[in-house]
Length: 275
Image (cartoon, rainbow, N blue to C red; front, side, top):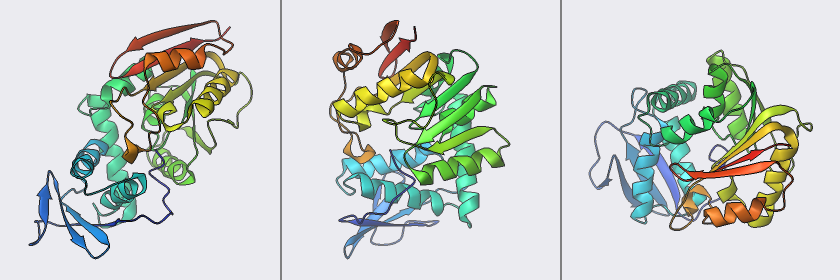
């Protein structure tokens, strides 16, 4: 999702601030509390530099989505970024804490998304990696810290900027670039493994097939794909389609590759081997 770059107006704009206790007039919803304030939804939270992380932020916001308080991708993303930015006295300190805590929980396995990252890291072939649709770049950073030569690509300039700053602060080499998955700004056969982790559900069928073709063009050895299996697309994450193994097999049927492997592990996986 393009959580790091928000510009379009939303119907029910979230206004976020940190508090040490829930103010009067707010309704508790998990770790967050909210109230309607004119045309906005005012959200308060108690997350700080010790507790802010990807899973804590998402868990609270998904409760608001489930209760119908936040609707749509734009409102969800504004609220998410608002929570991160307000968890510390400065924005730089807030983002640093968010990255460090999120990476720590992914490494230790305490993040719900940890098994997906662990599996993706285990499937890298060769010594170089391109993560397509990197968003915050948590996978790219982990792989670089594992010793791989890593490039990352995302359509959001905001996401690329945040990843670049985080990599520099952590003394981790990640070459992050703004680019579209359907027109990757990389040379043919220029990297060993290309990953598309929870990306294809953001694309329609035609764009997904082009993205897979582009990944095959850039990869030397393998393309690794992961998708969530959902009862319905998560609109707040910007998901457009509900995917199954049938979709993955159909999308790859006409592509030029040496073979495919499908399996399930916290969603669906596809490995495409290059000729």
